[in-house]
Image (cartoon, rainbow, N blue to C red; front, side, top):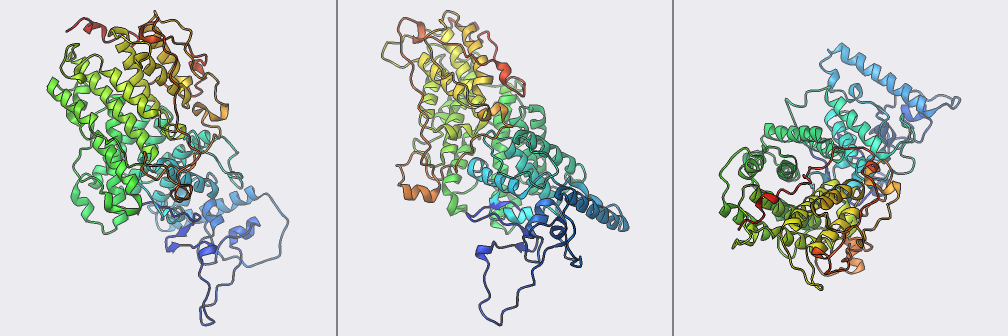
Length: 618
């Protein structure tokens, strides 16, 4: 069973028997003949903790579910005793229940013990407020580009955490993934009644990662994987990618793709065996998300591929309520499909056989891959437009590494100047996006901008370009890319010093005055690099076609399009004809050491220009 697509109502927790309705939706008895409601009283744990029991007497109460306790009604009511520490009471209850369950498991053999969540899990790490906030954050920010869980059943899945280790690992890994995001906000009182001290969300996210890995070691999830197993591995990959632990990230991505293949998700017949339309559609999306992610990561980190396009892509009509999101997701799948074993093998120098015609055809295919008008959310449009230009850059880099470029080529894509055109298109695309729609993609987006800017720098240092005073040219595109990178969380502290070092090495003749990058550092709480702080949370992303005519306020409120999301418009720098490429570049004052986690540098670019060996070639 999958996590499912949330309705707009409050988050509800359910037992395996069904979803518990919220008080506002509970049907009242229509007549005196209706079954009289059960007499309400506090469950044993809530009575012992002296807190209000949020339950109906027939299903686990909300307090017990969030605290990881078994909800029982066995105790005989007695007189109230003296008040004590709630945290100590919870610890005592958990330990007593754990010992009881271990004793029961011992009577039936220890083979049953590892399947008990109470036996494996470390209680007191998550509150219901934390889980709810993480779920809401995922659907508000991440879901359009990763539409793999369905929202309506999420409370049902959370309700199974007590009895299902798979459900527990999935929810904990989801929360870890969201806690590591730069703009994640923890709700007030999130740490109340927990056994851990209040701490930044980044630190809590890493703690939850360790909890997921620890619990997974206690049961054999490899031999009989489920969709929950695959999604958990993907969330672990996403978490470690955000933490710049790329070896660990790659391990869990490969784990996810391997588990998917064990389940047969790479075979079309696998999707005909299940009558649950929702589960089948989310499983198909999961396979294609792994497909796209593996290809992007293979290009960034020079890794091999395991998944192929062996099943049908999602259909636009599979969910009428998500036509826009599905359209954007299908565009993303089609954008990466040409990057198969042939390209990745050539990219990794694992095979030969590259030709000029094949590269030119691939560039043409990329240029025409996306329509002028995109039916997608804004966050999807950011990913699509930036990925398109980044992939064009990757193909150009493969072309130059094989010596296929020429200054007199009839194919524009096979010329030395092609990255100037790519940079122009990228700057034009990003100028229409809001800041928050770009920042939600995190470091992955900045790395793509960085790759394009570095390639443009190489071209500018070697290829003559005549620029007139009133024309935009390479200098302007580079300046705007640098402005954009420095304005995004994590860009100024980590990538700008690297990019400036490359620019100064490649073009030492350029003065270091006259160029203005917004140098005011963001508050410490807003830095992606200090993501342990609680930054500004995003509002819900646009669920309307990006690029369509502006919606009215009423219509926008219905679809959740943020009215206060002003597009990001980088201001063009002043053009000067006295300097080659028309401008000066100023240094960034923020040192690289400000990056608090001190990750390995992004995919390295040599300061020496790889194009130098091609200078003067016709």
